[in-house]
Length: 321
Figure (cartoon, rainbow, N blue to C red):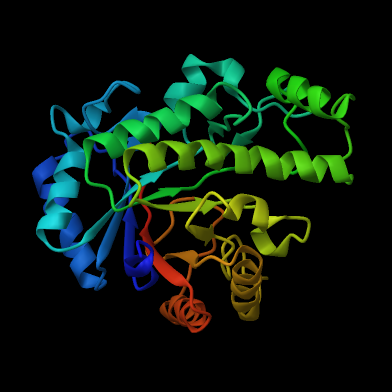
């Protein structure tokens, strides 16, 4: 059963720290030292930096910080040499500077027609051609390397709708009406959930074709901090593991510790799939993330594990230089 190893995975997630004078071999050696320190048996690594890929491929230009090195190939080989599992991680619809600059018409728009942003990034719309581009990008990675699992996060499809031309056309074709300005209606919820599920359905298709033993972990964000209007069953058909980032103290300290356990239980009950929860253990660079004490981090990890969740330890660096 292919999911078996993942249920006991101890995952270390990291992404590129884009220094101008980056010494790639040294960086990789130090990273695996960090993996060893947290007693991880699996490493997850982001395959791009702001949309610029970290390997030799055709999906996008190569990131300038790694020079001629095939960073993803080097990490994958070192991981398997050490007896670790390797997860190729993907940003999803956010943190895609290269793509959003090259194809601005693929970006999400709010009801005023302005870009829907997350920090300094324009979020991309899965109903645009980006929804076809991204599964092909994932296909390129899993075709080149021995990938035990993929982790696709960043599906920030807005609760208040995207009003780009692709969403308008798709919504009108399905419901024979214009996209509403209010979000509290049945059609909105259905459209929102189907948009996310369709994106993962395309990913499922390419994974099954190219690397059927690769585990797919999907993050939906519709259950962030206990949102009740989600239908996780729609998504769960196309992934092997459901990821949740709505942690205790993620943005502030108003979320109670018990919510971690309750959200895990709800996700597990609705999806009938294993649950993964990312846990930051380093100082966060984003200004509005709450800083955690050691005790806070330990309690959050313990609560996740007590509810049977897979814990993914995240060492966060900078998104881009």
